[in-house]
Length: 142
Image (tube, rainbow, N blue to C red):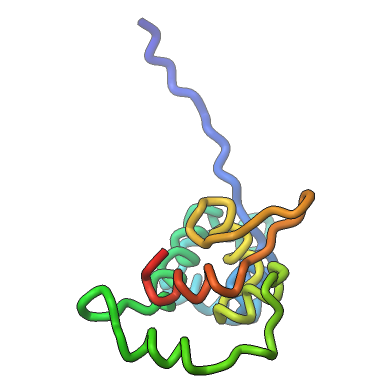
């Protein structure tokens, strides 16, 4: 059995790519790298961040933003959601509208849909969040 080391390529992102994915400024990305809050290294005079570190940050932010009722089901929130008319939003939400509705970045929503973490429907080749499914998901019912 051959135990030769195989070099694996780790995909890295520029500070601009990280800033776009996380919805923060490039200077904040550089500051977080310098402070050790974000894994990264200098490469040819520019900072590079491993994609895995960005994904982990997105997942942590995503988990923090999802409401979690103490007993798993909050009747008061559900009742309020049923009594408030939501006429300002269509039933099908584009990825951009879904991101705005959930308070997340577009890349985070796109990744969460790809990973099956956010409910969506496909119409043709496009993905849409459905308002009822997203509201149920936010309440922890999905």
